[in-house]
Length: 216
Image (cartoon, rainbow, N blue to C red; front, side, top):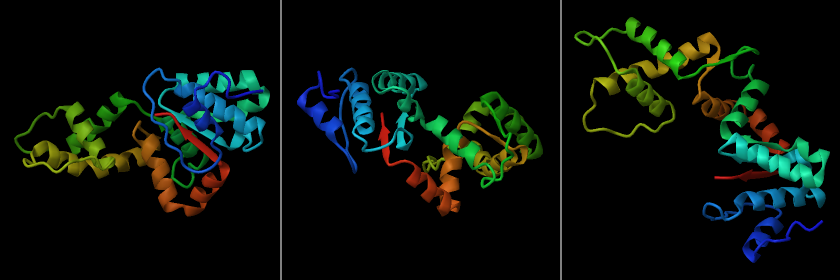
């Protein structure tokens, strides 16, 4: 089976790559998924890596399913063991597997934005600001998430929203842990916390995957 059929020279070079980092710069519609499918299939058929040692991260579940389907069509059943999904779904996989190390119940919950807003409302009631009746929850939520993800940029006017976000961010995190739930950002943050606090887990995950491909 030729995995290079129909590919241009640059695509063939990418598909032929075996080990180490490789950056591919390509525009929309230029065949990135085709290259990923061909490389993944070749790695399996040439026994460079087993299917369960391959991790493919994409930005949509649709793209991940398409890749897995296309490789399975050519390689067969073994390809079903490829781990393909979004960054968030991979984060969820890790959290489920290592929930105990993260201090979460085995049946932890996943909350949406409306649930997060409800938690913020409770926290605001507990931390009343004199002369301030209402906060825009969406704006406050975004500032808190920026703090959690370290995206908070220094601002010249450190207003009451920023002050409240700084106050509530650790309380919000604590409330999530208390309720044994994770929000959308936690799906990315918790695995990082896991790797930082548990080097043994980090090593296990590193050894689990010999090939990692990221479709940005």
